[in-house]
Length: 138
Image (tube, rainbow, N blue to C red; front, side):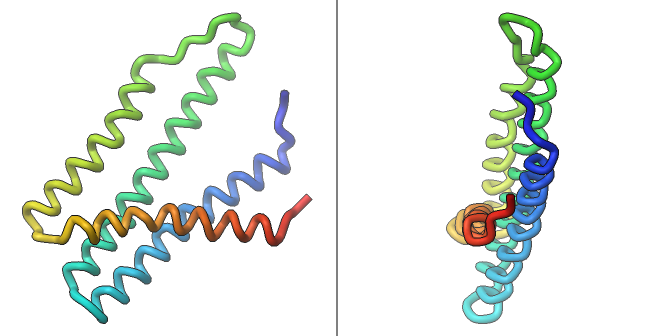
């Protein structure tokens, strides 16, 4: 089943908005926390939002690669996904965990602030989803 070009463009636009809003919401939260509470919390929120954005980009690249691989094998009865695809998916989470650990250990940034910064992706996704529901395009 082929997806209409207009739908693909709409999904791509939503992905772009999620990507931008992740950084924007993370920056706003980091600035507010840095000025109103503690600069280390602001740094942690900014780092977490940056990692959330990076995770989203890596996830998108992985899904795109998987989609292309499976589309190329459309005529095959049994499709094969390269083992490297699974490795990259696991590596994505391992790298983020390692980065969070190193930053927590050496920069003395509160781990909770980085974890909350990771929530910027969820907040951005929620904003874009609500926007899409309230202003549907046909």
